[in-house]
Amino acid sequence: MTREKSVAFHTLGCKLNFSETSTISRLLEKDGFVKKDFDEVADVYVINTCSVTDNADKECRQLVRRIQRRSPESLVVITGCYAQLKPKEIADIPGVDLVLGAAEKFNIADHIRELAKGDSAKICSCDIGEVNTFHASYSLNDRTRTFLKVQDGCDYNCSFCTIPMARGISRSDSVANVIGHAQTLAAGGVKEIVLTGVNLGDFGKGFEGGKKREESFFELIQALDEVDGIERYRISSIEPNLLTNEIIEFVAGSKKFMPHFHIPLQSGSNEVLALMRRRYRRELYAEKVGLIKQFMPHCAIGVDVIVGFPAESDAHFMETYNFLHELDISYLHVFTYSERANTHALDIKPVVPVNIRHERNKALRNLSHKKMQYFTELHTGQTRKVLFEGLQKDGMMEGYTDNYIRVTTHFRKEWENSIVDWDLR
Image (tube, rainbow, N blue to C red; front, side):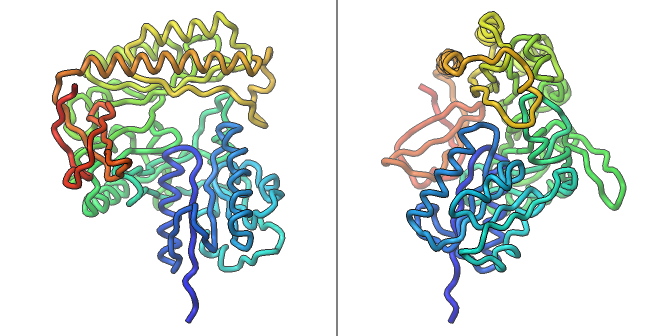
């Protein structure tokens, strides 16, 4: 009798990557593989990479070395954005057996069958211009919240970003298909869906039956709001120029879409935004935040910010800091700029010293802590609905309110994957 082969996964990066890893896992399990934890010995290890920062590249190399020490005879497969951008560089890492680009990651089972340890690393990748199909993905059984991928790729050309080179043109699922996935997830007991994509607000681009599809993100959320069984939706991230007033008003009136937006800013300086090739100015951003708070004063608003971008002076940084300090937002995701090959930002001077980048990062992270503390205190004494997660750690469990305030309490089995009225103290 042939022994069942085992596979273990590790995901670097964004919610989109988590949804894709989960889908790849189900494909391999359907093909007869047994899923194992990444820290266990497995026949095959799959690392789904990110390449937004240098840390993701370095972490990939460290993971491969760890696998080599633990299980030198196991097959190592690298896929994801880093694999598409730098396949030859990855193939040269000792211990890597297979590199799968953007077009091949969902054909992983076919590639593994033909793979043998000891051969030189095999690269299965194509020019990103040839990647134009959409592969639906969602996470399942990994978290209480399910990440549902509805869009992929990006047609923007931000000067710091490699994502269009790693994921290709903007394309998306159809509204009908997304509704079908939501109904499947509802039948499986999922309570909350987080809509994910590279540029979610660009949803609607794609082809069906050889014809160009004409749909919009607004149409999608209207349709999802009617799906029975799903109690909560979140929009993972949406560009400010694509966050229409009608989307904001709809979320405000919806019982299922949570009062929570995550809106990338990147800089509070219009000069830096222009260098970044962003498609808006800070005035538009402030207008959107103001409208959200007008309709939903209790709404959580998260912000992405990049510090240390080339030519960002002390004055530019203070513009960003003061803009965020005055803005009615709840928390920040702060990224330290790192140079990425083949991006326009490499030609922008002067370069900000790395130690200055880190100082600015620390300043904004401290601001984020104060913002979240203030936002949480504003809701003290209120009763809000919390979806508790099934994970138990040291006898405690966690959950999030509708407006994204984290709650921790003693573990109670009956609260797993349940929505509970909670008094905020």
